Image 1 (cartoon, rainbow, N blue to C red):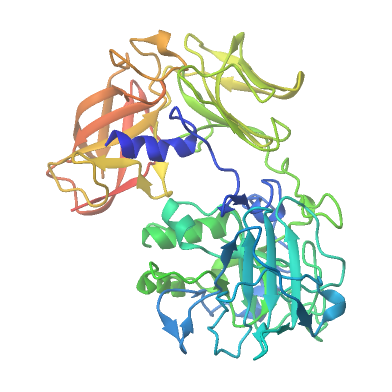
Image 2: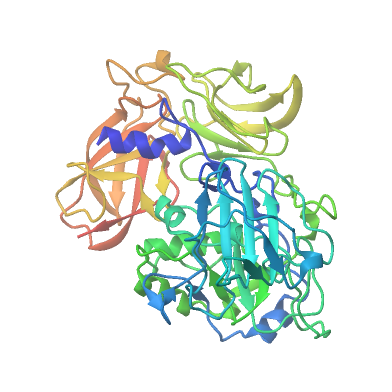
Length: 539
């Protein structure tokens, strides 16, 4: 069980070998920097003034649809495939129909490169290739190989995945909007990991003869403003209850709430693009059909724009915040709690995770002080810092982040004896394991392990910032737990061996009276109850 805990908690920088990803990766390449518009949350941005009109035009009663899945359709895979290639992959010339708006290449197309729709298809026939050594993306539209081995295509584009540069104004790409395709695909591996950290690509039947940042190209003769332009951004309404959906679908819908989706091409209404994968369960993807256009809203992303020709997005549109690293909720913090600090210019552009037995007080030039005490740091990047609140603090205190010797953030935080929350995995399932080390459905009467933070003072404050070894620290405040409102017997509450002090492991027995199905977990430490927490599947 400890191996599974370490593997998943490493993603939060809590284990000794941890690192927190700040952008999606493919083949070892980050798909654009963290501050790229594709990787920027839009859940707090204002609605676009034409939101209702655009929704009415595209279809308020038309439903979302996953334009990807497992199996075959008309003999070809369902979705837009991609392939990673080495830097020494031989290049071949490609002739383009839209030559003046295409990057000349040559392109590193392997003989067995997957083509959208299959080799015998007649559709868009995209080819997407990631050079994993140079971190360059090659995308081709309407790609055909002749009998002589020569390639011809409609258009092609080459993108530097380390860059914020957009294509020249008015240029297409392999996509009508002049944008890259790969960053907006839904991929099985990221859904399985529990989180999509980027916007998605989608289509509508009719678009306006216009484009808005970050798009660079239009593909329409229609000029009426009721039609959305290329680059229009939409998101799922925040108030929608996602608990009725499968875990996989919840991950997709949560991404639509947080990052939204960008209009990239003409096609069917509300079709979301993704990569084919035999691990997709098409029955679960069909759950998207219950989401209607009226459940969406257009969002105005113009305030994120820094430069006309740059895809870099402002990261200060979200007010600075200090949140519980487990729940993501703002509020009072407790001694020993693991917190996430959000802002702009907080640290190095490429995030750094701390390792070793003891955490540093400075990481990549970033340090955090709460009151007069320096905090141990788990992770530091330009938009987020993860730290552990020092023991011994009480009342209210200023939290100050310093980067490169300059103060970059100052906020006041209220201290509480405890501020418990259970770590959430995949936004809907607890980071929880059955006693035998397995995950998934949990039977009544069996023992479940949870991970939390915010338990307050412990019996071993000297372990602050260190990996737990030897005698396990126990919280001074009593810990209780409930599943679906039914109190569960707490068999153990204390430090988790191999993880940082500040991570609370709770072993509970599933109550015999707990109802079956997906049920919420709540914990209490001292006089403070956790916010509405994750859910487990009781059987």
